Length: 266
Image (cartoon, rainbow, N blue to C red; front, side):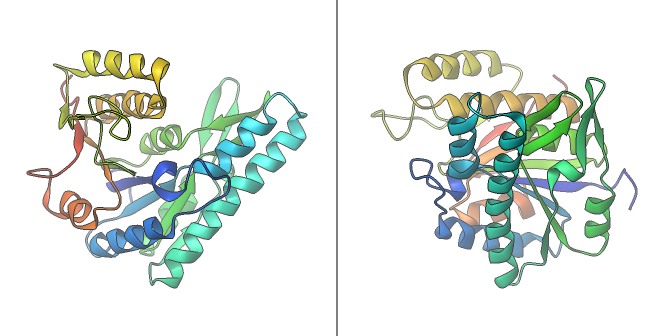
């Protein structure tokens, strides 16, 4: 498989996979939906799957960052992120999805202010028709460690293995004009492009100061960067709507329930 071979990059977000207000909790309805989504696409597409940290990684990082030494931080961070990833991969395999876990810190590291990336294990898995599953993690650097987000993992991987599309699976249908769980009349923003991305980001930034949508702000920033750098669409949508996600992956982006971030040419 050459570096020109394309792959579909799917992120199963932490808000989708876990209950963020309950430490170390996993949503098995989300795992069931994820397995159905993967089964719908794997016969036709090469898929790289990544999972967010959700109530696993966020709990540990918030609890320990700045309070323990570097060794303890790295050990606990890696133990917790590996634990969640194992639960996900084991579930998928039990459901008939041929997937393997690939520890992010073994393929990405930091040296001299830059990242080094070795995708041979990922490429080998794809060549065999196996879905590699990576995740956000504490990676090793010359300075000690860095907490690498799932979106950053995708960005570094995509520089070596060309993306066809990025799909972020969330617990809501996409990006809204206000927090859909808190405001009265949320409106889905169906497209973010060169004409409106600045205003959307400013709107979400103001929400970050007033409610709990800061996570969406970060996702949109990452999505804009990914779409612009790799000239492909980035889709943010609910992972619970299996038919909708399957349509996105197999039939395209017409008449789908999602936010499509498209900075191609921008």
